[in-house]
Length: 207
Ligand SMILES: C[S@@+](CC[C@H](N)C(=O)[O-])C[C@H]1O[C@@H](n2cnc3c(N)ncnc32)[C@H](O)[C@@H]1O
Image (cartoon, rainbow, N blue to C red; front, side):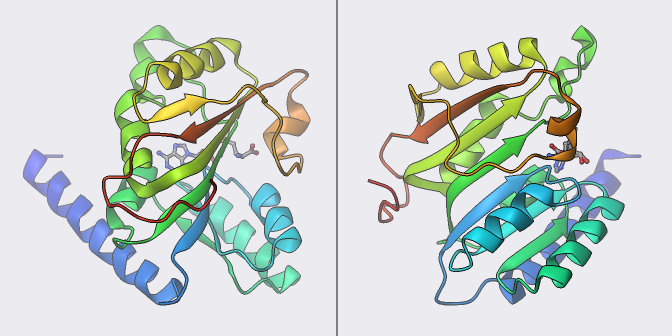
């Protein structure tokens, strides 16, 4: 696809996403729990059931997965839980200014094991910076994978990132087995906190 057409398509997607988000986000609610690559929504539906006072959004590239997640959400009757089919970077760009990601979960992201595909891994330094720009000081990032090389790389990326700091305790504040977790004989988790000053000077949700 020629570059200018690709960029026009991306711009249209972001504009549609932004209006969808403006429709979803209540004016009074500025804090958000985000799950990136939510699949069929098992984790976030369980999370939202346990935390009905929090606004939760799960995003995934695949429509059939977000459709399944939405059916799960509807069966559970959770009004503050939303699933959107979109790409994670587009989501961060489209997110209205002033909305703070307080907790971000990335569970079993695609591992892209072949060396020539590593560039496709979602967790990269620039993506972590984009997450940091939309998180508040003290916001947390939770990452889990069954692919040890991706885990090691994620730790190294976070450890050297100026905005994020690895936490000594790798246990998650909430647990619910995802589809990929159920298939994994072993997996590895990490938790990080956004530590540098907030460029938007917003209030810290977790201090
Ligand atoms: C291996 S699956 C894990 C699904 C779920 N988290 C679980 O543990 O069962 C990874 C998911 O991430 C989604 N994904 C991959 N890249 C993405 C991106 N850039 N933006 C949003 N979702 C993405 C895929 O469509 C897929 O559903």
